[in-house]
Each structure stands twice: as structure tokens, then as C-alpha cells.
Amino acid sequence: MKLSQGIAGLVVVAASVLLLVDRTEPMNPALARLSPLPPTPLDPTNRWADDARAVRLGHWLFFDPRLSLDASVSCATCHDPALAFTDGKPLAETLGVGIRKTPTILNTVHSRWLFWDGRADSLWAQATEPIENPLEMGMDRLALAHRVLAETDLREAYEVLFGPLPELHRSERFPAHARPIPNDPGHSHAVAWAGMNEQDRESVNRFYANLGKALAAYERQLVRADAPLDRYVAAMAAGDTEGGGHLSASAKRGLELFLGRGNCTTCHSGPTLSDLEFHNNQVPTADGRPPTDPGRFEGARLVKANPFNGAGAYSDDNQGPAAARVRRLKTDSMGWGEFKTPSLRNLAGRAPYFHAGQMADLESVLHFYSTLEGASGQSHHQENVLRPLHLSAEETADLLGFLLSLEGRPLDPFWNSAPPQPSLDRRP
Ligand code: HEC
Ligand code: HEC
Image (tube, rainbow, N blue to C red):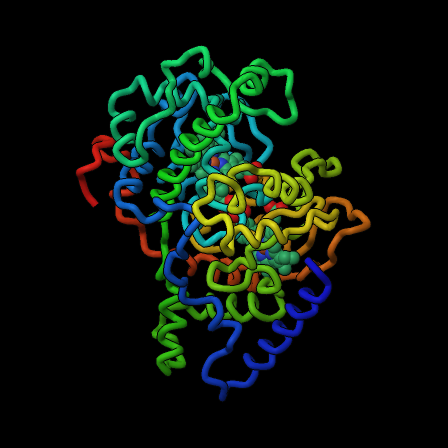
């Protein structure tokens, strides 16, 4: 975060403290900025983002273990609807153990950057990564294309929407396994990929991006809004100084702390309760050793180099605002050890917390903000926003009450499990 932004944040916080004290003011503007959650933003980089057939196919694919090499892992294995679309583990674990905590997919359509390090700039670009991650689904894009061709239901659903698959029967042009692996060019998959002609690589990439676009169309449905905080703010805006009784007295005190002395809105601002950017909170590491995860430092470089980014050949709007955003992005060293500010909506049910699941529950998160106990070492380009808050037991309970007022209305249960089949002529 730049110093100017930090100062701006502090000014906002200072202004909000003054407004909270001034009871004649109808509503604190800092509070008004937290609600309501705006409508789902359009994604012109994905032509199928709001296509009902793509939603249906994506819904099916999300729960389909055939997207993994040994058909044992689906997206839902780690993003389990019963656990707020997470896995409940500190580090994701399927074919191997990863280095980061599985984040929720609820409301993630409101993110600007995806992943803890922001190495993808759209939901569809994001979806291509876990499929080929050897620790997650272990697939490669050629094997996936051959599988979609072989499985009639998938092939039909794919072709109705996106047109014919690549000419996969031409085995001299389309090997059984291949994918680009920039940091391991000697890997057999990478060698096979390099051996393909450019046009064929492009047709496979397009197939792969299309699957991502269908998955994204489904993920766009996973929004939980209209939390008690939203109802409280709406009532306040309508002139009810009690906020319709939607927050308890304790949650209201927690809200004042959140906007005021707690400084939380320096980063957890706006209607997602995230600035959608990256910060280094010096979260303790699990083993107490100095942190090794470069976070945004690497993520910024990766998203610019990602062929599936908004400015790339597979984007359906590669001259639009999403393309400009990724082109503008700077990859300087300010981002070392920074992670995305998570949205604080729908926190319950997605424990443990922080980027490597370092905190088992929300009480432990608040204990950290209160004491900064175990904070991992400063580096020279560390931002210095956090100060120990020295919260009393009552203040901790109040903040917790506030955080739990951010639970949106439950999803329509239709989205919580696989649809009956990938047929394209069913609801919604
Ligand atoms: C092995 C468990 C696992 C599987 C399987 C998995 N994910 Fe994830 N997912 C994760 C982890 C861990 C992260 C965070 C990784 C990181 O930030 O480096 C993540 C991040 C995400 C994000 C970004 C959320 C955000 O707020 O930035 C989305 C969206 C997502 N996954 C969707 C999917 C989809 C779609 C699939 C299936 C194609 C999938 N995931 C499969 C574990 C998994
Ligand atoms: C300097 C910016 C900043 C400030 C100030 C800040 N946060 Fe955070 N918050 C973050 C970031 C970044 C993360 C993720 C950190 C990580 O995992 O390394 C986070 C994580 C969290 C989480 C865990 C969410 C999850 O999904 O893992 C909670 C809860 C939280 N913050 C609440 C608060 C509260 C309450 C306050 C005020 C007392 C606060 N934060 C102040 C940036 C901030």
C-alpha cells in the first residue's frame, strides 16, 4: 500500500470517529460505504459469464471429479458448500499438501484479483490453475481435452455451448498429456507442449479457457448478501436511528470499534469489507520461522505473464478496462509477503483463518490484532499500519458480535450440490 493511501485511510478513519461522536449526523459515511453489496459486476472478458447454459455446465463441472487426473478430486472437494465453500483445513490437501489455505468462493465475484497473491485477474483465469496443479487436481489440459471428448455427456454439453473440440483424434498433433510449465521446461508434459504447433496449442488453450469460463459462470451465482449489517444500514438510511434493531448493542459497539479505534476499515473497507488489495499483516508463521511465501510480490509478476489474463488472446475484451488494469499493474518489490485483504462477509464456517490457516478461530484472529503476538519479522519494505489494539475482553466480544453480523442470507440450496446432469435444457 502506498503511503498516500495509508494517509487517506487514516483521514477517513479520523473523520469517521468524529462523525460517530456527532450524534446529530444522520449516518456515518464510513458506515454507509460498507453496505449494500452492489449487484454482481459484469465480466466482459468472459462472453459466457451470464449465459444460463454456461452456468449449468459450470455448475456440473464444479462438482465433477473427472476434472482431476485420477477422477478423485473436484473443485467442491476443497470448496465444500457445507463449509462456506472451503475445506476447513489450514492448508489445502488432496493429491498433495499445498502452501495456502483454501479461501471461500462466496462473493468472490466481487474480487479484483483472485488467489491470496492475486495471480489471476478473473474467475475464469483462476479456474484453469487448480486443474493443472499437481498438488490439487493433477490434470493437464491435453488429458482433460481427451477426457471431455471421451465422455459423451461432457462432450455434448461442451460442444453445444462452445462449438467443436480441437481435432484431438489427430494423435500426431495432440499428445495424450501436455501443458506449459514455465519453471520446469524439461518436464515431459512441457516438452510435449513445446512440440505442438502454435495453432494447436491455441485451440487447446481456447478449450481450456472455455471450461474456465463455464466454471466462472457458476461461481458468479455464489453470492450471499443482505446480512444483518445491510438491514441495519438500510434502516439507518431510512431515518431509523436504531437501525431497525438489526444489530445487538454489543455488535453496534463492535461496529464503532471497527470503524474507529480498531482501524479495520483502513483495509477492510467498502461493501465487501475489503479494499480488494494486498497488505503484509505479519501474520505469524505456523512453525515460528521467518516467512518464505512471497505473496503479492510473485503474484503481480504471474498475473502479468498469465496468457489467460484480461489483456490476453483468450479474453473476450482484451482492450477493455480489465486489460488496462493488468497492463497498468506494477511489479515492484513493495508486495513481498503481502496477501489479499479477505472479504469479511460470511466469515463463520470458513475457519481456520489467514492465508495459511494460521488462526483456528475468529477469537484467535482478534487476539492477534489485539497483541500482534508472534508477528513475523519486519522487512525493510514493510508497511506499518498495524499497532496492537489492546482490546479488553468486552471489546473482543463486541468485535466478534459485529463480525458475525456479516453473514448473508443462505444461498438457494440448488447451488450447493451437483445438478442432476450436465444437460443443457434444465433450470434455472
Ligand atoms: C486442493 C484443493 C483445491 C481444489 C481441488 C480447488 N481449489 Fe480453489 N483454491 C484452493 C486454494 C488453496 C486456493 C488459494 C491458493 C492461493 O491463493 O495460492 C484456492 C483459490 C480459489 C479461488 C480464489 C478465491 C479468492 O478469493 O481469491 C477460486 C475462485 C477457486 N479456488 C475456485 C476453484 C475452482 C473453480 C476449482 C475447480 C476447477 C478449484 N478452486 C479447485 C484449493 C483448491
Ligand atoms: C493493514 C490492513 C488491515 C487492517 C488494518 C486489518 N486487516 Fe484484517 N486482514 C488484512 C489482510 C491482508 C488479511 C489476510 C492476512 C493474511 O492472511 O496474511 C486479513 C485477515 C483478516 C481476517 C481473517 C479472514 C480470513 O478469511 O482469513 C479477519 C477476521 C480480519 N482480518 C479482521 C480484521 C479486523 C476485525 C480488523 C480491525 C481490528 C482488521 N482485520 C484490520 C488486512 C487488514
